[in-house]
Image 1 (cartoon, rainbow, N blue to C red):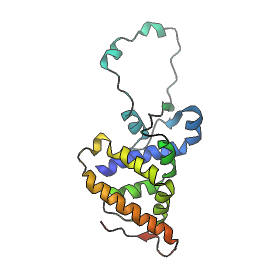
Image 2: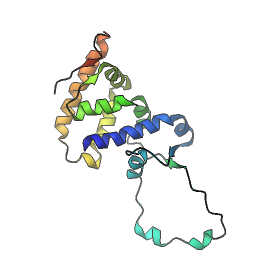
Image 3: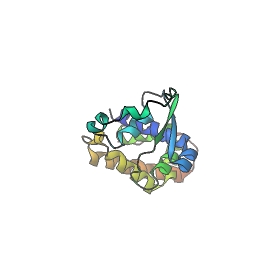
Length: 179
């Protein structure tokens, strides 16, 4: 269940990374309508303000009678949700691809983190990592997670990754991080 949550976050991160140039200039992202099971739209829509049912009953359909129907969209523009902290999307861009998922499984599971992904984790910086963790732990889906245990595991992985990154020895590509 936790890994599914992060996969949605990772999918959003990948989508954000893929469209970063567009997002920075237009503050919108262009997402294909048909997407993976863990769609970035799910993450984005979950963080949008919800409209009350009263808004759906007060539409004035007569205003749109003379307009041609819009073509079926093959894609849509979606406004980015507000950042949990300034620079959130920039931090996510730096932690794209499989490393985001691997680091998540390392923190929330019992898996090891590769030297390559440790380098990426340390590369985003402590502030970015702390803020991403804070935003993740504040998700409603994380309400039942043992936060102190996760924070302890996170600190262990961060320290181990800093150590591995400082070694700069290319021996093994995988360093086990004991729980």
